[in-house]
Amino acid sequence: MPRTYTSTAKWFHWLIVLLVGLELLIGITMPGIRRNTTPGTLVDLHFSFGLTIIVVMVLRLLWRLTHPVPPLPRETGWWEAAAAHVMHFSLYILLFIIPFAGWAWANGVGWQVTAFWIIPMPDIVPTGWQYTWLASDAHVYLAVLICVLIGLHILASLWHWYFKRDDVLERILPQSSFTDRALAYFDRFR
Image (cartoon, rainbow, N blue to C red):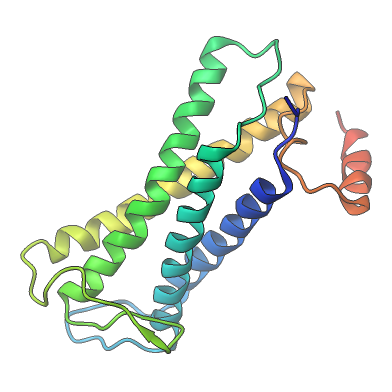
C-alpha cells in the first residue's frame, strides 16, 4: 500500500483548502445580511463557491470511498489514530452541512441561489421557512467550528512534522521541486 495519498486525493484536498479559504474571506468581508438585504456580488460569489464546495466534496467522497487511505506510521498511538479519524470525519460532515445550511438560509429569506450568476439552483426550502434563522445560526456557528477544527488540523500536522518527525504531513503535500525545497528549508528548524 502506498505511503502517500494519490495525486487526485491531494488535488481534492488542496482545492478544498483554497475554496474554504475563499469562502471564509468572502464571508468575513461581505456586508452583513439582514432582513431587507439583497444579494450582491460578494453574496452571489459566496453562493457560487459554496455550491462548488458541495460538488467537489461529492467527488472527493466518491474518490475516498474507492481509493484506500495511506496507513498512518506504525508508531502512531491508538488515540492519535482515533483523533485523526474523528477530525477527518468531522471536516467532511461540516463541508457538506455548512453550504447546505447557507443555501437553506438564502432560500428561506427568499433569495435565488445561482452558480456564478449563470445557473439558477432549485430552492431547497420555501421562502419564509420556519427554520430559516436556525439555518442561519447553523451556517455561522458551524463556520466558526470548522475554523477551529482546521486550526487543530494544521497544528496536528505541524506536531507530526516538528516533534514526531514522521511523514504524516508529507503524504498530503504535492510532489514537486518547490515542495522539496520548502521541506528542506523548514527541515532546518526541526
